[in-house]
Amino acid sequence: MFRTIQDFVNEWNNESQATQRVFDTLTDASLTQQIAPDFRPLGQLAWHIATTIHEMTSRMGLSFEAPEGEEHAPSSAKTIADAYRAQAAALTNAIQSQWTDAKLAESTDMYGETWLNATTLRIFISHEIHHRGEMIVLMRQAGLRVPDIYGPTREDWLERGMQPLI
Ligand code: NI
Image (tube, rainbow, N blue to C red):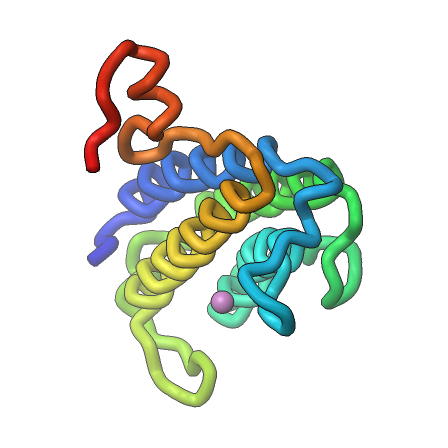
């Protein structure tokens, strides 16, 4: 449970920096990678993460510019990565300048249910981590090297001369 804005900002900074490292690894060619036909391609998953920042937090009254663009992801990896960078910073600025800690204990109608704002912020971060994990799989399928986030990757182990764990 986030009890202070600072607690949220600390966690958001860590997670959004990790997500940014994932986004900065994308290439234009990788954006069309899919797990199977009719499933969201890699670029669309990234765009969903980038656009959800405004979509979800603006429902709670936080005010900042939504990302430019349509529902369909841009075809440029750099455009997506830059949009995410701008949105992540905009959310941090907005919550620090527009909210006090008391806002976390207020509730908002979210998708037809009533959620504590602190809960919404928790779900918001979990949602991003969820889709980031999906992206990592598609990135591997696309032949990209993925960044380490919570621990070393297979490539990291090998470069350290260690046997990767099963
Ligand atoms: Ni989603």
